[in-house]
Image: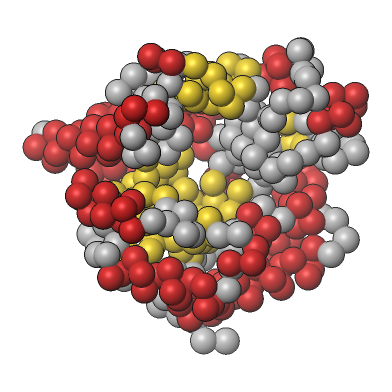
Length: 349
């Protein structure tokens, strides 16, 4: 097997935005106007192929935007792989074939999360500052207090009735040992393909990072979990999405965010950064605007610069503004604030 070289990455922090697979020309113009020249995308199953992705990348390139990383939920969050169900070998083969396809297109980073139901929330339409709509995660609710069948709790559809009756989303409790066994089974089969095709795999922490949600134990919920995940297969093509939000959600469990940034940048394990703030720590938190919340976002920005991080930084989960702000109001506000913090951090180095 030929081992690919690591992809070329521009030095320093590059701002990156999510784009829809069918992104409008207006939004691409908007990104150029606010000075964001990197993008990532989550594709639907029928879009996750060479032809579609090549055209998307070419279109973005013509608009001075580089497509940095790409994923698809059916590949990145396969329930068969995560839960060790029948058919996981076929899904691992699909994952590895997707790595080959990404390599052909010229995309060298993709993401995974060990969440069979995606991100959880007790309320996806919680009102924060000025009535902006955001995500709230109250573990008392997700543990059974006041659940209702007509409300959405996850990114991926679940049987709400079964969840409310049993507390499980997949019929039984899945232990932490099982999660680690399933992860090791997968990653030992995926990394050889990642190395062959030159596509880095970035592992996102569980959100919320708690012991378990709905009967499924969480894999990545503290500092040492990442160390363990990286020790299963030593590879330059296995790293992390450093999610500031998750770190702040469970600060006691994750530990010193600055020490983590220093260690994982030094080990070249941070491939991309999710940059967001929350009002407080678990068992209940609200995702805030980047200029509020308890996290010192300027201090975190300084830490990434001080450590020598090179990669993308994404505005993550910003509250949705009033309609009068326009379709891109929250992005304009958040990226403007982030760009200002980046400048302040650079000056103070």
